[in-house]
Image (cartoon, rainbow, N blue to C red; front, side):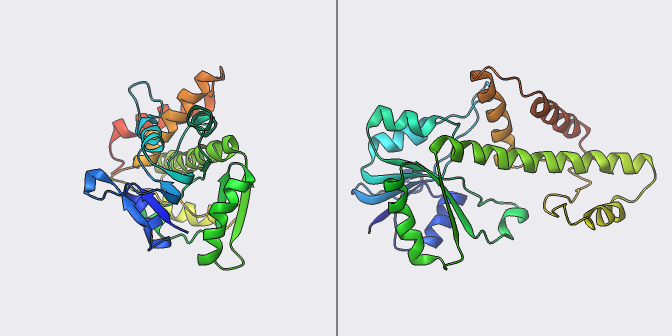
Length: 250
């Protein structure tokens, strides 16, 4: 089965490690593949627009311009995007949250699961390829496209909350003359609490990663389209902006 990877950033390069025989299509980097493949894995950027919403224009452009039996979106897109593209272009499209990242938190994790949203017959085309490269304990969750899309934003928002929460308690600890590192270890003794994203970096006591910077405003902007006011998300986002304004806790 032939596979084409569209995009050669962090996600695209990691997908190429999973599928080393795949064709690479990334014109900005000089990699062009115009042949039709069985699967086209979309790993292109969805940057933030001026209003905070996600710009899905590159995702739509590559679906419109490329040919494949099944498209597999690994880019973060707002809920409803995949269904809209299926209806608009009449193509078979699945979507999957991606967890590759550039930070140490992402690079140190070996993910043993796949979440994939779409029609089961289309998802099974993708799953067939994963079964060739993964062990039997690898978990595969099939869901709707909209649920898979929202799952990605929920995951990134939760990580942003963890960073913001820990940076808030870092400041509280400072005012109490308590060492945060000692406080953190005692807090993490509770088995209900996961260790990831709980470090505080005194020179940058806030979240400032590419994905969180664009995906938090994107989910807030998406909520406006469904007439829901995400007050907690807004306050978290504003708190992090305040922390960024303070620059340092040293």
